[in-house]
Length: 373
Image 1 (cartoon, rainbow, N blue to C red):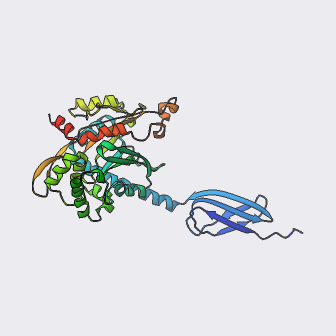
Image 2 (image 1 turned 180 degrees about the horizontal axis):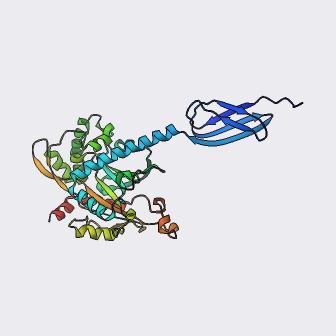
Image 3 (image 1 turned 90 degrees about the vertical axis):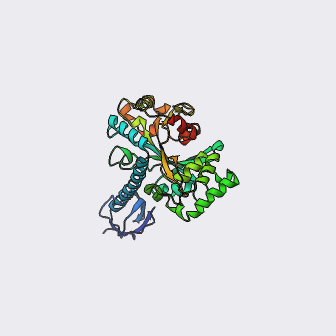
């Protein structure tokens, strides 16, 4: 006669802290386990089974179909917001739109973006965090901080979520861009400048909670400024003056040069191509900005200018946005890889203070004056 079995005891540990039901059948050795869940189980699962005085441990992971679907819906929404930001940016910046079309004429659907960049006021909750929250909510990760003491700025950059489905190869439907957000250190400005900036951020009320929405709509979260306030900020910080009239608008988007497939896949070739078609590049520190390790190469155009009607009915030309180009070279330990094997993570990541400091000058009066000449 078969010996009586000891009671079977089951413990389930799920990283999502969800409860579930199990059914178990022991028909022969090895033990056969049927797992039935009454709720969606997500994450890592560890099942410990004590049966017949023996311990069985089963570990597995599961992402149910509904969770996958929800993730794809969230990514689709994120891309739609990026597309709206891009549309506002291209409608306001004729040079950027024309250059993007030129690059498309050479590379078709192989034009992807390295990063999106935004400017903010670091006061009253209107700084980096106001825009970053949106991207963090959709899976972005905070990376390094950069400091620019002479400009009274700091910045953070954010890497996109990994293993993201790309509906197409190009633009916002391709690989998700990095995000670079800077802020003016308002407390380091003169008392008069601080007073002006705080006047408009207070006027905005809770507008900082909707930074991404303001960017996607192309709308200021405060009233149009007075021309005298704009002029005062211009004398102290061109960054501050730019932010006062442009708000959370996309400051620039950056074409990923190494992702191109045509004869302009080198940033030097692309720069020559851009200039040959009549566009001026930012010359601050030289047209080509190179990181100390030589692996991050960047250049940018000079910002377009548009007429802006101030609150006191004065209309003046103000700088809006520009377009940037970045080539990330392969890291030394991956140089032996064939071209078709190289992925983005094999290349130089991040940003460089020296490069970014010069790129900021794309909206400066010196560069705009040179462009007009």
